Image (cartoon, rainbow, N blue to C red; front, side, top):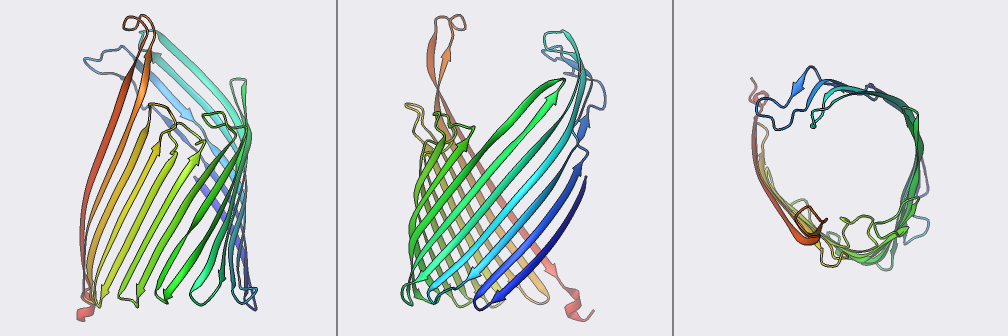
Length: 363
């Protein structure tokens, strides 16, 4: 692969206004391909007689991307703070394709094919993120945000004379509004309402709608005691109307807590994360997914000796029910039955490190 990138930036600062421009051009090429190094079959005792005499697939591609980035920090009036980022991206991609194989399929019939083609795609992405803060008093502030994300992709792929065209996109608009209370310079509480709407172009949700909506709440607590203690709590809740897919959540909850204590050369830190999602739109076929993560870490950071140790725990659960319909003749008359799925995975991770710097001993 070959990657070439050029970036040029300019920063402007004037009386409380800070504006940055950045231009990036990326030129990328990849000779992507893989092959079977020799004959392969199922081995002794294989149930089916399939084998491969040879197989190759090559799909080299290249693209050029132009990125235009703008950053703004401003205080136009006494109590108003503005912080924003805009990222505009245009990409042109071209690719070639060839695939060839020969062998025997699972029905013991020989097969051989050789396909080739080419394609080209154009992609445009525009991201806008604007945060607003208005100070009502020295302790209360109104906070808000506007976020917009547009995506557009079109192109075509031709394989053995058959052409496939693609043209789709979406436009997402999000708005946050809330209040912030700063009890002390080191203790802040924030809470508010969040709305997001996504409009689809040449796409539909699984309920044949052309847009999705999300309403939710957010809240956070940030507590600093000089450089000795730091605690951050963050919570989000979302309710979705017309989710995009059957496995997209209709409601979700997310909680994240981080803490750190610094005692001279010794520190302790911790993380607690929980995310739960549900979909109850399919009558009689709900699903639920949860993820729980916990990390504990401690260390000693001396000039000569450094010690670190940590423990991590991750637990994931996926539970849902699905109705399976059988046609006549498969197991008698046509019928349906419920198929429950219950998956659970757990991971425990331990790590430790010792670092000894002999240069501090004058060696």
